[in-house]
Length: 66
Image 1 (cartoon, one colour):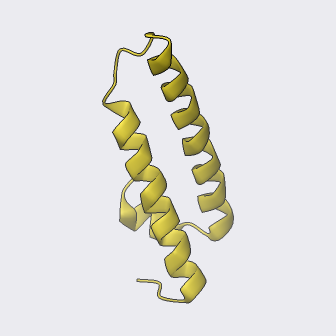
Image 2 (spheres, helix red, strand yellow):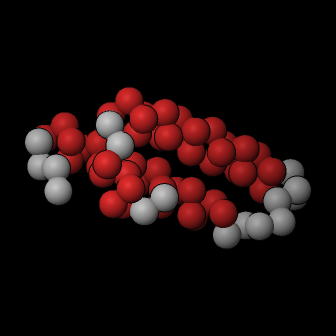
Image 3 (cartoon, helix red, strand yellow):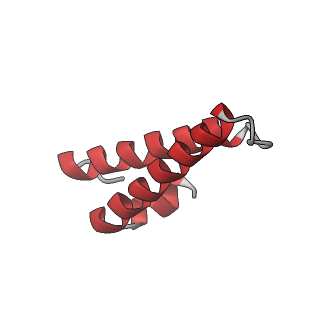
């Protein structure tokens, strides 16, 4: 999801997306630990998505919507 798409979502949807990404990261880490993960590049991608969502949430919280 692009930043512009994230900025269009409301806080409720962003929170849901954040929970979904955190759950995916947990599953990826578990698969990686048990040597079942083939696409290891997904871990940094999901972490970046989480950071992007948190950034947009902070912007909305402080009233600096772009």
